[in-house]
Length: 323
Image 1 (cartoon, helix red, strand yellow):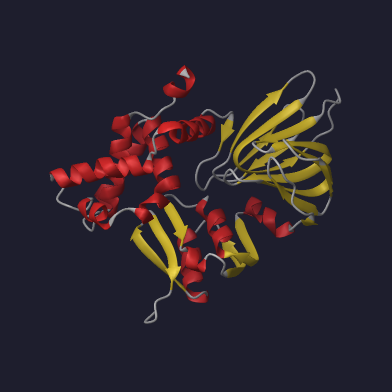
Image 2 (cartoon, rainbow, N blue to C red):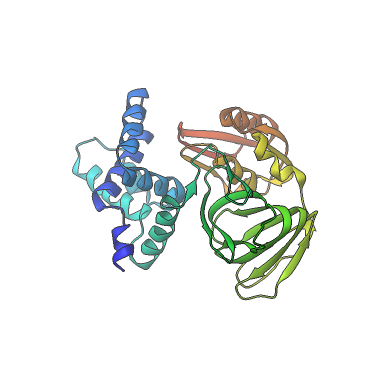
């Protein structure tokens, strides 16, 4: 319990994060506002942790009562605005057991052996010669012992090319849903969110062993999704799914919701999609280095509009009748 409590973001920092969210939504927000906000984020690790939580869970604001939404934009020194910021902090940083569980996950990301930030990729050469490519917004722990080689994927996506081990130690990747054993292979593992893990095999084979379901072996060219209690059907691996290694995102009839989730790894702030258009299909090749350009392309090719509340708060919504 002490470990959990020590990782909790201080209440004052939560209020500051909520206040910054309000400032950035204001019509008076300018470059000086955004520079001050970035300086606040960089000033302390707790600040950045708080802001990442705001970005991750700010979808809760869609259900805020109108009165609260209006009060957050009231005069800067008004009592109503102060109370609204406090209520906003509660909405963003849920209390009780759920808060503690989320904080544990957040702390695991921050304390991971290796992690990448928004828009960052990294390539690691491990002690045995194994190569691990990390996509943006990913975190892993590395645990090599005399008997086994272990990676723990805490969040995000990795591409692993295993090396032959002179000690013949097995190579495992653990996620929250189970264990993967590499059998002389090149494969990708993705854990975007908490519901399931995706694994795709490009060379060799991988054994998938969920926590509470029968194991399944994948051969080169196959992929599947699995949770702790179920394994999805085998599918053909999509070679385009790994082009993030070249800084690109290639989509072929990809649901917009999934496309936006991949793009969000490369864009600071909140990027959301209205459920009414979440199933729209996206096709094409998009540069991950220029997310503004990608959003502009989506607005021109799909029946949607890109709504900027601020540079860091963007929602894709159905195109209006007049649009």
